[in-house]
Image 1 (cartoon, rainbow, N blue to C red):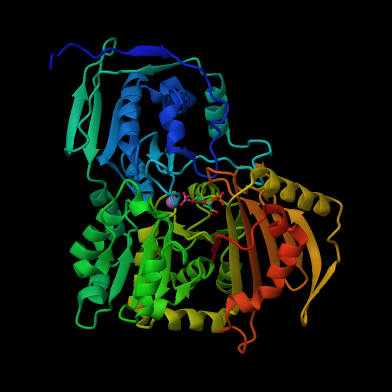
Image 2 (image 1 turned 60 degrees about the horizontal axis):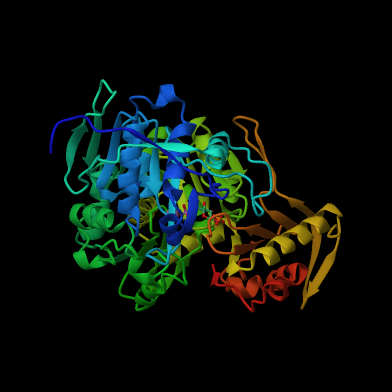
Length: 578
Ligand code: VG1
Ligand code: CO
């Protein structure tokens, strides 16, 4: 290789109309990225161009992905384009792999101006699967689209909007096509570019170590080690679902905390996640559920492709609903040393998440925020010092140590509670319900339904809401009678910057506080995904241990009848029930 500076080229390109980021970045089929000329280059250039040249020049950015198919190819392009766009330094995960929470951690550690994360999270991967790309800002959080219900509302988010606007008019992109980076060696590589005074540097880092280091300062590792490998240790089973979490689980749980090697399964990251949905729920993590039912493990957990989601199970497969999970962590918050030091500034949950957390907030006199779906809203509150712990019903739990949800953090939070309380998962949850009452919750996901039918359904429901068709309406199902108290389209005013976010989900709220919520997903890549969320509070001790599907059946019936969901989509049931 000669030492002459690398060429910086500007190449002409033509814009695409469909590069609007969704709830968590731009997600498309791999084939879209592969077959449409410069599809990736256009979006990456739009990201770089959205950052002021002065901020960009000489800056540090972080790059990592969940290891899915196309990850490596995309990183090579991102590096070549970063150099050509004046970025001074890139910090990249070993082999280009980094979990979403680790990216957030590394951005903050290196005081980077932002990062690019290559993931479609819980969506399937491989040649036939999805690829995704998102941009995180200096606080470590992702920029996301903020309007819900099918993406028809005004785009509120400045950065996302800027990226999208640029992508619609882009005419050229800058690239150093000869630049070759070695992702396989932990190293610092420097490159001389023509017309540049300073060299461009790339650091390949061990993100597992940075992330582990952060966790060591949050949790009591000695106590966790005792729990997992001491004299009376518990037995755990962690399923990385062939996503990015394998190396993190192995290093932190097995090597450092002493859990036996066979307690971690599916820990080799695969480009297609072994052909499965890397989505930790009862449907897609069925193998783990089955293993847990056998009764030989006390605690089980699974993660999604990029490691920000978690599912928690107790012995015999006892399922912890994510809405309950965050509430239980809140009720036991001082089992985690981090919170003993920082105190608790506030709690938050997304609107469709059940109000279990609200009960804890009320009892402990701590502020509770109800935000739209997506982690970004939590990030704003955290940056303003208003929020410590939060969660979403979609298997997302986290705290203000970073600005993404954090799957392994949630697992260590639960293990900390187990260590402190010396009780089983099931007993902890049951005690919780006895103290606070139980918020029964279920979610029906209808994946890949016809887009037009889904949009039409939402529009018709919204019209009924606008015309106040639901007001005071009574529904009798069996012996149960429900009366509508109010129906609306959820709207959020950010308490930090006063920005208003509309169209965040259609709600029918009944006089007893029960809710039916309809939303269209912003993370799918084919057709539409309709989500129906249902919850109802119960404090009668005779009823709190009943099956949620039985308890909520009347509300499900109402939800399906009012929306005509099955008739409109031709489905006879949901793809996934939580
Ligand atoms: C879904 C979830 C939402 C979550 C988002 C990103 O969004 O409902 O709670 O924040 O995924 O999670 P939507 O728009 O499809 O409902 V992840 O793990 O895909 O980054
Ligand atoms: Co994810």
